[in-house]
Length: 55
Image (cartoon, rainbow, N blue to C red):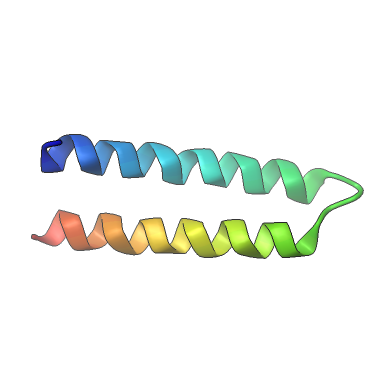
């Protein structure tokens, strides 16, 4: 997998997590732990995207 396609894949996953987090937070019966885990994964992806974009 080329670095450009890998970066695109990470960006797509990041956007999907954003949508999933937003949907969970709008839910009445939000699982706070699930939201925290998704936010952590989203941050990990963002860090990797930034690292790959720099180098």
